[in-house]
Length: 264
Image 1 (cartoon, rainbow, N blue to C red):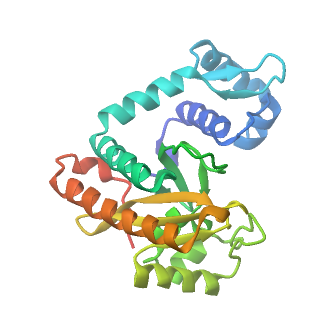
Image 2: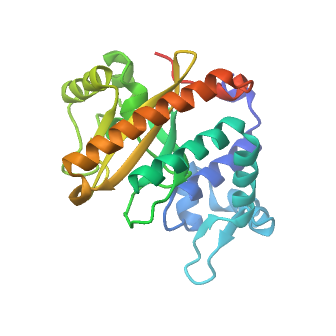
């Protein structure tokens, strides 16, 4: 469906919600207007209504808007009723129990990874990602796991302005990215080595439903904890989780929930 066939006022509400969700510290009215390409006078009544219904929260001191508690309620209800996410979360908890590191679940959303699940560990680790966050797929282990079968042409079309340099370790060459993606095909897992955060390393495996990649699962940890022994345990545990989750997918009746599947 082309966007001209969609309801523009509804799209504006969604644009507002997505813009404030993507900003870690919230956005001012001026920043929201700039982000979605609308005037402040046009969007203010919409935002006022969203604040009233608690879908958006206004910080009275900073005058910044951020997602409200009603968004949390919707997200919780969606997770509870989305059977495959619930099943994957149970497996993620087992991964964390074995590795004692944070485990995340992501799907592909255009050129980005959309983080849709996270299970924390007992050990502290600072991540740039969180549930609801979008980050460039080319820089994330989750993203590489999902796009490794894409053609060079398709990947170039995803990043017409070039690959984003988020840290000094980010891959900015399409040729180098292809070598990394080929390694995913050969080894079965993807690696983000300080490409999103200079202090962390991440390993991820793709998740398939009837042969099609629909999501990816990862474990992240600080570089100083990424010893050879720890890394081997993480990769083995991810492979075990991958096999278990894909068996669950194969037996799931909720095939319609995979409409965001990654196609080559």
